[in-house]
Every structure is written in C-alpha cells, then in structure tokens.
Image 1 (tube, rainbow, N blue to C red):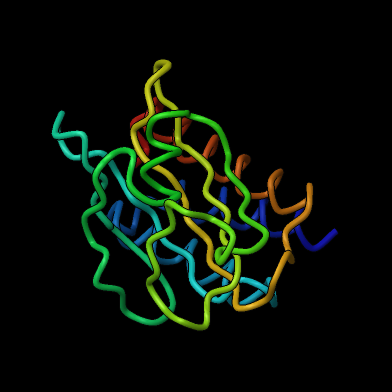
Image 2: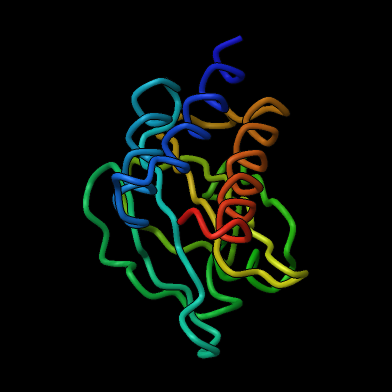
Length: 156
C-alpha cells in the first residue's frame, strides 16, 4: 500500500507544471527517501549528450563527489550498459562498486528508458545490508517509467 501511494504521489509531482524538471526530480527523491526507511540516498543521473557519461541531476541525501560516472564504472555505469535494474545486496561483495559513503551497505539502480535507449537512471543507496526486495524494484522501475512517459508527453 505504501509503494502504491508513493507511485501515485510521484506521478503528481512529475506532472506538476509549476516546477521545473530538476525540481520535480528533487521532489521525487525527497518523497521516496523520506517514506521508505531503508532509502538513505536517492538520486537521478542522466546521460549527457553522447558522452557515455552519467551526470547527477537531482538527489536527496548526503552530498556526493560522484557527480559524473562513466558508462561501465560502478553500479550506475553498469546499468547504463545493461539497461537492466541492478540490485546489490552487499556492496562489499561487488568488485566494480564506487563508494560514495562508507555507511552504504547496499544499492539498487533502475534505468530510465526512452525510445529503447538508456537516458538516465534512479540510484538508491541503503545503509542496511540486503534491504531491497521485489517491491523496491517495482517502485523504482515504475518511477523510471513515469519519468520516461512524462518526457514523451513533454510534461517535463
């Protein structure tokens, strides 16, 4: 029920014409971080031009130095290549992990697909080991689909 409520609220935020694109994404990050107890950092990265890099556009949580991530590097970079949601139950067991904060124990990244191409992603860090389940995957993939649909409909 919580996740369905969040999905409804994110849809409202993303279609709110009184906010610009970045502010809408910041609001989504804040909403889900404040309502899902195991979400300690939430951010949206987007592909910049055709540089094969992800650029941090909006987030909620502690500041990160990882504002630009090359494709293939870290979990976000791997998702940029695979176009598939990646759940990492324990970041200590992941060789290609970029540490943003020593407290982070797990991560989930879901791609934003538009026209068959990865244009961005949502990244969630947790300070708990293995907290993510199929509900988290569904929530984040649905939010990514909402972002994509709103771009198609030129609401962002």
